[in-house]
Structures are given as C-alpha cells and as structure tokens.
Length: 94
Image (spheres, rainbow, N blue to C red):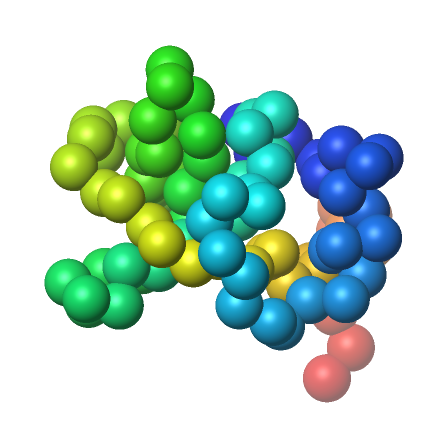
C-alpha cells in the first residue's frame, strides 16, 4: 500500500520534476522516485526499516542493496473516470 504524501511534503510534491539530494527525501513512509546514477538503478522506493526499499507491484519486498543518491517526488496520478456498468440485459451501444 502506498501512503499519500505527508502534509509537510505536499508542497514538495506540487513542485515535482526536480532531482534533489537524498538527504532531503522524506522518511515517513512516503513513496518517492529514487536514483543511483553511478550504478544505473532507479525506481519507486520508500524508506522502511532504516533503509531504502524498492516497491514492486505487490508492495514492498525487493530487499536491500539500493542506495539512491538523488530523488524526486512521484508524479500525481491522473484522475480516473469510471465507466458505469450496464444493467443486465442491456447491451452497450456501438
């Protein structure tokens, strides 16, 4: 589960797009985009258990060994529009 940005970090998330030194990254469970340019690693990470961990599709769990040196906020998600379900017996118009 990805947590929303902390209220203190919301203004940082609104800026987006700029790489920052990892020392300024949130360590409150907020997911960020981390990068280690020297070793060509980048990905969605969170600070947990006193270290940076990749977040994979099923949640946490790719272990340790990633030491990002720069970071940036994740982009805001686009608005999702739900398509209403059709009542039974009615076909979708073409």
